[in-house]
Every structure is written in structure tokens, then in C-alpha cells.
Length: 324
Length: 259
Image 1 (tube, rainbow over the protein chains, first blue to last red):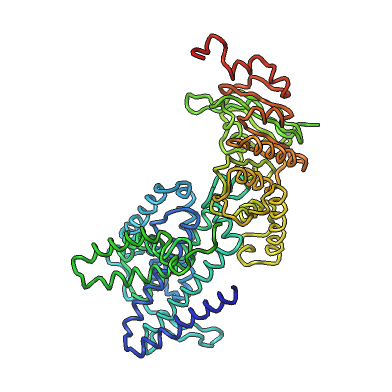
Image 2: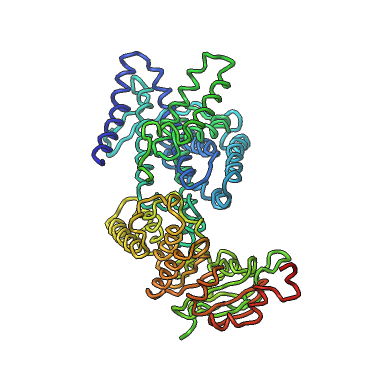
């Protein structure tokens, strides 16, 4: 069983990091690098949302953290001349800290009340980006330099992205490697005792607290990890786009992050990856239907959620264990 | 011996409603004490106050001489006062075994990061908690069904699982909320034996319960609450003879219209 899992993980890594780039090069479709990088980054942010679902909270506010993470990285790189590589973890940590401050009061809410407050967060983040001086208002931050080289003791470990012949390939590699790392971390989390505690929280917070679990602290921990993912995703996105505006992540994105989780399946750690891929390409494929795009898209989504309440992953894994 | 839990002048008001009014009683170590009373008398509120899920308007609860009312519920649990809930409130989506393992968390000395990284201490604890959970499940007759999802279990097993979860937290005082509700005669008898067996492990037990036959059989002492006020306290035999109690449960004669 475990050997099968390791083999599956290795096959997935090889597919993403070797097979897909080779296929893209052979087909001369280098535009796909950008698309797939986006999918990878959006699925990182969705993975964060998935974790808040895991503790029983509907999170429609991930766009806020993607935006905050993007701005933190952009400001550090442009205004303070930091290396992108240093700004990336700082962006994630900044989001995690911000989410602790925001989360402590709002995580007391449940169900639709929590969802509604988080929905507002994205809009709050957008308005703050418009109003603050460091974010340069509606003009946004543009001409952000591409990630530079990583050197250690004079040894160049990774050349600057500008020196790559195919810059988008470098971004593709960065995004997918981060995606793999984030989901590996998430998988480990869910399968550790910490994940068990989170699951207990989702089932019954009163009982958990009666058994001595520090429920408020655990809730905020899950939310902070979730927002860290949002910040990381946002920061890399901004590095690729080389610009960020208050409208870079909107309420629409927040809703999509949540839909990605639903579509992939809330019971499966890797659900958000599949969900993001299908939703992203599904939307693009429907582009040809013109004015009917949204109608068909929404209709198909409703049907999918009705017929596959446990998400697309449940197709492949019908049931983990017989209940009888 | 000094009482293990003292409830002193406990009062809880919700707006104009006085749910619990100046209730005092002591719980002796290793006894089984039942809190009974008609529906809406304030029994559950007393449990919530003792486990510190709600804060008293006035009065206090002490555990081994230390005030515990007003602390966070998980802190009270950590000190050794653990509350279980009615059968519908368990970890429904977890397996019986996982639920009991989670409830071992209080005994854990590993850090959350240790859990994540799977340090030697965390792994040793996991094995230990697994063994302990198996033992508790076996003790309460759930060994056969330990890998079932809790929501698939029948009533009797759910009740036992509730107690198992409580036991796993290693309580000194265990508060059981209606452990016999909805059980038939045989199931109740088995559950009564279960509660006694828990007591024999050195745990002090407090029960809120409606099943009078079971309460009379199992309790060392009984506290009777009506309209938020303690109206009687004593052994089952004393309570059965108490006029105020009979009145509270049956009503005085001129009020029993149409019976």
C-alpha cells in the first residue's frame, strides 16, 4: 500500500516535471507553460482553502491572502530591493500572521456566518490596496524584476530567471515544484496526529474542547497555514505577471478557490489540484460557446456537485472502506 | 476526605431568566453523584458551569480547592474534569478507535510540530495511545466495532463510545450527560455496569439523568434541582421519601388537573 503510494507520487512528480515539459516542447505550445503555472499556483491557494474546509469552515476569503502575499513580495522586491526568493517566505509568513489577527475573532463564527465574513475579506484587501501608499493605489506595482539568481558562498545554485532561454519554463518549474512541496506538506499534515485533531474539530468542537484540545488555537493554526498557502501562491503569481493591481485577486477568485475544493473533493488532499485543473481548462474550453459560456459552466457545475457530492476524485476511488 | 468538587452558591442568569439559582453541593472522591430534576430544571446548565463551558453569574466551582469556573473548557479538562455529551454529540465522521485516540491528546507531551514531523516521542506516544485506546474500547465492549465510523454505530454502542472518549482523557471527575437516555432495560443494565466499572478505576462520576430506576440503582447520592434551585440532596432512599421531590415530579394534588 505504502509502496504503491510512493510509486504514484514519484510518477506524478515525473509527469509534472519531466513528461509535460517534454510534451510541450515537442508540440511547440510554450504558451501552455504560463497556463499550467497559473493552475499550479491557484491550486496552492485552493489547497489552503481545503485545509479550512478540513476543520469545518467554509473559506471564501483566500483571494485576500493571495493579494496580500503578492503585494508583500512586490513591495519588498521593488521598494526595498530584496531578492524574490527571500520575499517569498516572508510573504507567506506575513499572510499567516495577518490571518492570526483576523482569524482569532472570526473563527468563533461557524457555517454561513464565517463564510460571509471571509467573503468580505477579499473586498477589504482590495480596498486597502487602493488606499494605502505602499501599494501605490490603483496604479498598482509594475515592472517587477524577475526572480534573480540564488547563490551560496559564491556558487550559483539557480541562475537568474532573465538568463533562461525559455523564461516561462523556469516559472513553470518554480510553480509546479512549489505545488508539489505544498501538497506534500498538506498530505503529511492530514495524515499526522495534527490532522486527526483537525478532523476532530470538524466533527465536534465542543467535545474536542471538553477532551482538552485547545480549540481556538488549533483553529487559528489551520487558518494560518491556509493563508500561508494563499500568500505563497499570490507572491509567485505576481512574480510571473511582473505586476500587481488591487484587482489582481478579486471575490471571483476567492469563490473559485472554494469551487476548486468542492469539485476535486473535500475528502481528498489532492482534490484541489484536480479541481483547479478541470475548472481552469473547463472555463477556457467553453470560451467558444460565447454568450452561453457562463450558463453552460454553471449548469455543468451544478450537475457535477449534484451527481458527485464527494468530488471528481470519488470517481476513481469509489469508497475507501466498506462501511459494513 | 475533602470533597473533590465543590459547587458554591452557583447562579446563572440569562437576561431575566434565572437558570441556576444559588446551588451548592459537594462531590466526594470516587462517588457516583446524580443530578436529577424535571425538564428545564437547570441540570444541564449546572454541567456546563462545572465544565466551564459557560461562566457563572455568581458563585464558583472548585476542584481540589482550586477555582475552575471561568477557565477555558480545555484547561478545566486538562486539570481532570471532563464532560461527555449526549450520544448525538460525538466525533461522528471518525472511527470509534480514532475518536478515542484523539481524546488521548491531554496526555500528550509531544509538541504540535513533533506530531507533524513524527519525532520519536510523538511516534512512541502514538503507539502508546493506540494500545490504550484498544484497551479502553475492549473494556467498554467496543473491541469488535472499533474500526467502524461512529455515525454507523447503534445507540448502545454510541453511548459506550461517549464514555470511552471521556475515559481516554484520563479524568479524575467524569461528567456524563444522560448516559442512559433512549436505552431499553437490558441496555441500561449493561450501561449501569459500565459506569460502575469506570468508578472502580478510581474515577469520580457525576450524571445528569432522567431514567429514575437507573439513577436509584447506581447513585451513591442524588442532588435534585427544580426551577434552578436545589430542593433536596441525599441517598437514593432519602430522595425517594422526600416530599419536595415527590411534589416536584408529580405535582401537588390540586394542580394535577385532568389526571
